[in-house]
Image 1 (cartoon, rainbow, N blue to C red):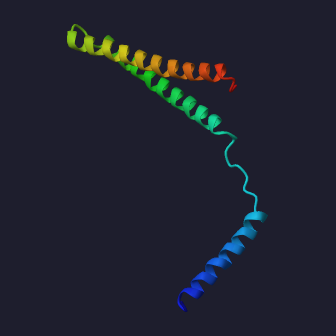
Image 2: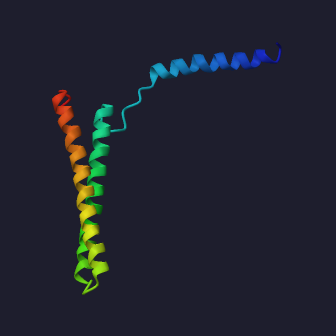
Image 3: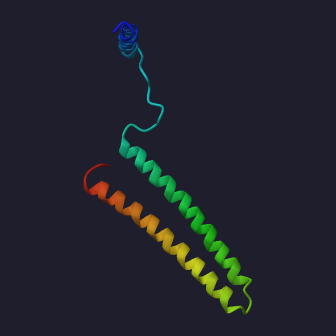
Length: 110
């Protein structure tokens, strides 16, 4: 018991000092968003922009491969698949963003 008494005293002291400091210190929000919805919307916008940029790069790459394929049927087929999947990926990302925004509008969140 004698060994626990200093530890208990220190813990109680820190609790008292901590509660006094917590009442005196005001921590401001470092983010420019106030709600979790705004943070998630910002993250979704960032992901949409990055993935769209990657899709555009892949479409350009597919076009370059298509133009330089010559008579190679395999390279032409790979170029068409690259362009096709890049467009499908972009459509999925933007339709997901559209559906989230539509759902938020229907529920009256915006």
